[in-house]
Length: 135
Image (cartoon, rainbow, N blue to C red; front, side, top):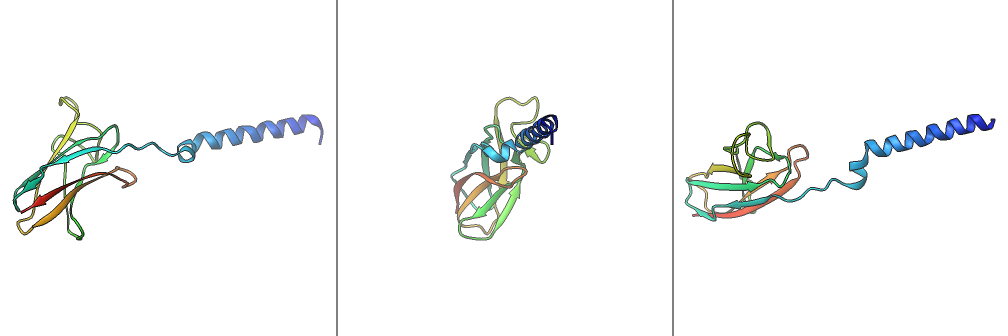
């Protein structure tokens, strides 16, 4: 193989390697995901609403807040009142502020410790949770 062919093959190999790194850069370095700021009504009566307030911190949050019993399997979902679509990173266009708000109704039979769980839209990775009590 002469020098010209070696050079062409070396350049092609370098171009392919650079392209592979560029395409998979987020997988190589890891995507920086910051937790969301979540707060809830600390204590509610069963059958009443618990208000979940969220600052997404730039994350794409699923528009399905999960209410879960601590140590149990009960799950109830509700959506943000000020978000349209399957995911949210901020309130819908035209609304002031950066807080997403969900008013979720608890079941009449609930009693004890519960938490609101927020997940990332595409990966279902947990982004944050906040605990509350139902009496």
